[in-house]
Amino acid sequence: MNVTVPIKIEPLKVACSSCNLRELCLPVGLNSNDLDQLDELVATRRHVVRGDTLFRSGDVFQSIYAVRTGFFKTCVSSEDGRDQVTGFQMAGELLGLDGISTDRHSCDAVALEDSQVCVIPFEQLEELSREFTDLQRQFHKIMSREIVRDHGVMLLLGSMRAEERLAAFLLNLTQRLQARGFSAAALVLRMTREEIGSYLGLKLETVSRTFSKFQEEGLLEVKQRHLRILDQAGLQKLVNNTNC
Image 1 (tube, rainbow, N blue to C red):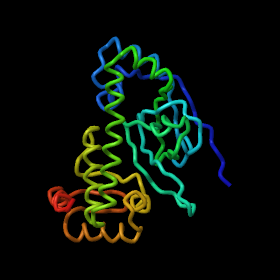
Image 2: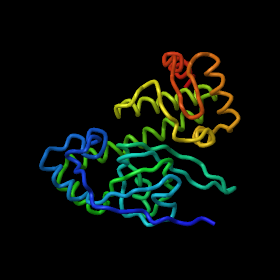
Image 3: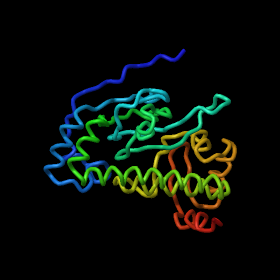
Image 4: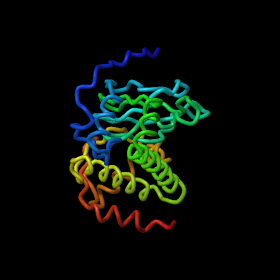
């Protein structure tokens, strides 16, 4: 039996203008006056403990969420009852855009570790965007980035072998982490191999076998969820050799 744990909500203590993720999140390119308006809009923050959901498929859409700390996965239930992972989101990225078209969320957002998100009421965001064109432009860029990312996943699933899919996934993950000030070579995988397989359209055994192959070939070093990339150029070569 699943027990839903209430999500803790608290007043926002760190304004967008002083947040160290502002160059990755919605405030990118906003001037100080616009940031003051955004600070009033983003008035609450939520804590989501590992394994809990921020929202579920079918929930009424009211807000989008900027990940401040932690890591999430989004997933949908397939016809046979299995969860299909549709994405992984980290600090500085937005969750909840899926609910804009139908006013209901179309996926579940699950915390892969204890996380914290800034709550952005969408109706108020729309109103503010009409007043500040820079904010509207940035929001459109974020939505476009999501579309491009979805196209990238379609390319992974449609034309790449298992080795190429995993290499592209790891390179994308390290690039996103590097943009947030983390190492481009060493990381801790917040998701399981099964979740990676679900996202990449691969069986768990294939993911595990490919990790082992990469390690044998000297491309990376794996110790449980701790991963160190030893030959980034080698991984990139795998991806570049993909026939599109």
